Image 1: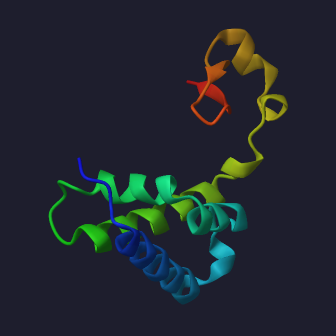
Image 2 (image 1 turned 180 degrees about the vertical axis):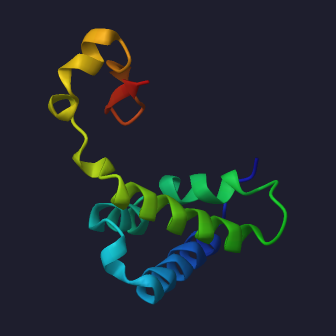
Length: 110
């Protein structure tokens, strides 16, 4: 699939920032917003995910960013660490830490 152009990436960023302001920036993690502002590949993933969806790809990607960031903030995804996972889940094998992603971050397997 074709990656978004630099102009399309900037449009996604601008439109998402407008939605953050509209809905209240406190509903979103500052860390997620910074990543969106600085990581072109991260922005591209949202755009590419909407490639085959019905409707406008840019609008769909912005809506997906907003929904994802709200969910991440609501569930405290930034605060999940190996130490924050209750030991009983690790003991039962429900959750475990294994390998690393392409950014070098540990993977949490459910």
